[in-house]
Length: 210
Image 1 (tube, rainbow, N blue to C red):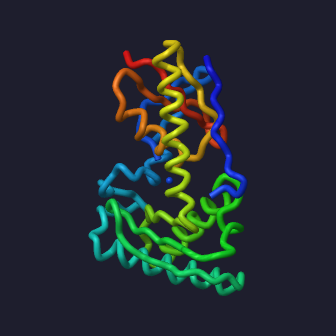
Image 2: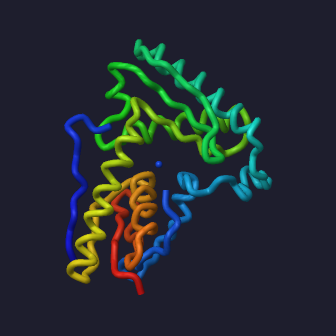
C-alpha cells in the first residue's frame, strides 16, 4: 500500500460520510463526522438534552451565525486582533468568516487552533439557543485554500491507484480535510475512498472501485 503525505504550507492556512474500514477488528463509524459534513443541506434531526430537535430554518441558522459572530468579535477584542467578520448561511449551515491581517495564530498548525475555536463558538451558540450547531468558522480564507490543496492530494492519489491498481493510504486528517478528499474521489470513476482508524489518527484509503 502506498503512503502519501499531504503537502504542508509554510504558514498553514470542515466531513465525511463513507463506509469505514475495520482496524484491529474494530470498525469506526464516520457518524462522528456528520456535524462537519457540508454535503448535508439540512439536519434531519438532532437529539439534545433528551429532546428531539428538528432541522433549523434559515432564520434560525442566521441567528446562530450572528451569535457566533458576536462571540468571535469578543475574542478578537480580547486578543487585540483586527478583523472583518461576515455572518451568513450557506449550504444549510451557519457560517462565519473572519478576514484580516495578523490572524495566522487563530488558524494554527494544520488548522488545529481554528478547529478548536470552531468548537468553542458552537458551544457559545448552544448555550444561547439550546440547540447543537453545525457552524462553519473560517479565518483568513484558510478553508478555501486548504480545499484546493486537498483536491490536489486526492487527484494525485487517484492517479496512483489507477496506474498501479493498489490502494493509496493518506496521512491522518481532520474531519474537514477527510470530507474534502472524499468529495473529490467520489466524483471520479473507477475509484472509491474509505476511512480507517480513530481520531486523531483517522485517515483515508483510496482504492480501486469494486
